Amino acid sequence: MTKLDTTADISADTTAAAQAPSGPFISRLTLWTAGIFLGVALLALGAWWFAPREFHGVLLQSPRVAEDFTLTASTGEPLALSDLRGKYVLLYFGYTFCPDVCPTTLTDLKGMAQLLGPEQMKRVQVVFVTVDPERDTAEQLASYLKYFDPSFVGLTGTVDEINAVASRFGVYFERHEGSAATGYLVDHTSAITIIDAKGYVRLVFPHGTTPADMAADLAYLLRRG
Image (cartoon, rainbow, N blue to C red):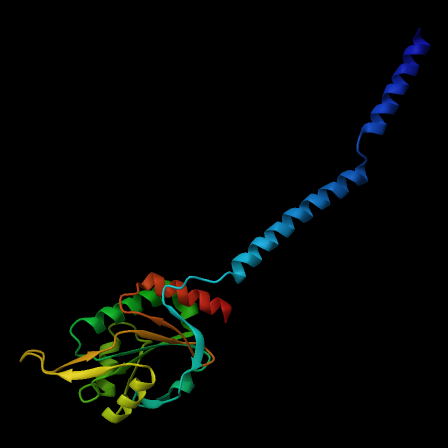
């Protein structure tokens, strides 16, 4: 009886061993499963990376090279647009005596800069081109812009120079009489043009684009180079 039990036990152990997966088989199964998960993750990442982004600003489908120009900076020195190559330039046309739209836009740009942070802002330059060169001297621009962000650069020149630059970017402005308190006012286009690090016009922020939306679009472009 004992001999028969031992034989039966040996037979059962042999059968169980034959049915149990071997060590190498488990390893291959684990690697195969991990490979599938990795492949799915890579496909998802690729779909996210290459998927068209919905910008908050207006994206130019056919970016064009921004025509170069030189004006007098708020530092008192000449500054060409090409001098800023390697940075994303946010080009805005306005004037320091503007009662509403300009200070609002500059406040939004200040908020955008704060959201991007110092490191990313090293690759971004806000440029404020005056549409009122008769009153906006380099000194006036420097005094005005420092209240928003010391890194913002102002540009001025003659009326003819400003007209020529504005027309290249589709910016309209016209002087008209205001009140005795304000003096004359200037109606002007209030959009922000984004020029990339290679000098191409890539994006336009309409008036009212929030700091968070501007920062999100720029952060995406900065990641892409």
